Amino acid sequence: MNVHEYQAKDLMRKEGLKVLNGHVAKTVDEAVEAAKKLGGNIWVVKAQIHAGGRGKAGGVKLAKTLDEVKAHATEILGKTLVTHQTGPEGKKVLTLLIEEGCDIDHEYYAGVVLDRNTGKITMMASAEGGVEIEKIAEETPEKIIKVAVEPGAGFTPYVARKLAYGIGLKTKEEVSEASKFFKGLYDMYVKYDCSIAEINPLVKTKQGEILALDAKLNFDDNALFRHKEIEALRDVTEESEKELEASAFGLSYIELDGNIGCLVNGAGLAMGTMDIIKLHGGAPANFLDVGGGATKEAVQKAFSIILSDPNVKAILVNIFGGIMKCDIIAEGVIAAAKELSLKVPLVVRLEGTNVALGKKILNESDLDIIAADDLADAAKKAVAAAKGDA
Image (tube, rainbow, N blue to C red; front, side, top):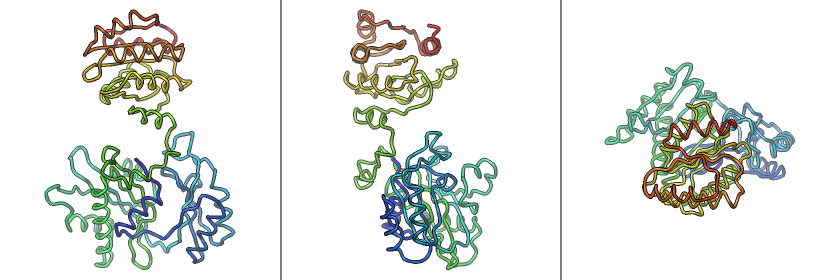
C-alpha cells in the first residue's frame, strides 16, 4: 500500500525524523492559507500523487510570493500529471502539500529495502540525490552505497557510519546527524512493516541539518492487520476502480495493456500463465488470482471485471484445483458467461480436485468453450483466439 508524501512525512515526524513543516491543501484558497500559516517568504507547492517524477512533470513549483502560491496551486490542482511512474494515462492531482523552503547545501539519496537475494534489510545511500535513482543504478551503480543489516545484530553504528562517510560527509556533526536519520529510517521501516522507505532527496542544509525533502513509504499489504493507523491512510482515489472492486471480493487483480484476459488460481500460476502467453506471441490483459477459497460469486465477479476491459479479445481460464475445486470454477464460469452474454472466445484448462466433474459441467453447458489439455496448449489457443484464428 502506498501513501502520499505528506502522510509519509507526518509519520516520519512522529518517529522523530527531521522533515520540513507543511500543510495539506485541497483548494487554491487552502493553499494560500497554508502558506500564510507557515510564514516566511518562500514556499514549495507540491502535487500529491502516488508516483515519482512529479517535479519534471510540472507538479512541484517554487513560490516567492502568496500570489505565486495561488498561481501555482491553480495550475497544478486538477491537472493530470504524466511521469515515468504513472504511465501515459497519468494521474489527476486532487491534493497539494504547501511546504516551507530551506537553504539546501547538498542533495543525497537514502533508501531501505528488503534484498530478496540475501534475505536481509538493506540500507542504501548516494551522494547523487534529487535525480532518478533508477538511472544512477543502471548507469553508475558504484555511486550507490549498499549496506546489509545483519538480522542478529540489527542496525549498528557501523552501518550508519559506512553510509554517512560513503556519501561524502566528513565532519563529526554531519556524520552524527546523518547517522541518527539513517537509524530512525531503519527503525520506522521495521516498526511499520514497510516494503520501501525512500528519501529522494535527503538534504544537508547550509545550517548543517540533515532532513527529508521528499519521502516515499510503501507498506506490505499482508501486514496491514497489525497497523490499522496505516491502513486508514489509504487513498482509494489513487487506485484503479477495477482493482478496488476486485479486492472487495478477495480477488487479486492488476490491469495490464494486453488483449487476453486471464483467470487463474494462485499468484505463481497466474504469473506463469502470463509468461507463457507472452512466449507464444500474445499479451495478457490482466493479472487475476481468484485465490484458493473463491466462491461461485467471486468467479462471476472476476469474469465481470475482465470483460469490463474493452481490449479483451479472448479469455483464458487456467485452474489447478487444490483447495479451489474445478467444479466451483466451472459453475462460476457458466453463470458469468450467461449473465454477461459472453461474446469473446473462452479457453479453459482445468486440472486437479474435481476436474472430471468440472469438465462435465462445462461440456454439458451450451457454451462454446475451447478446451485445452495443458498450459502450453491453452496459451497457444488463447493467442490464436485473440487474433481471430480460432
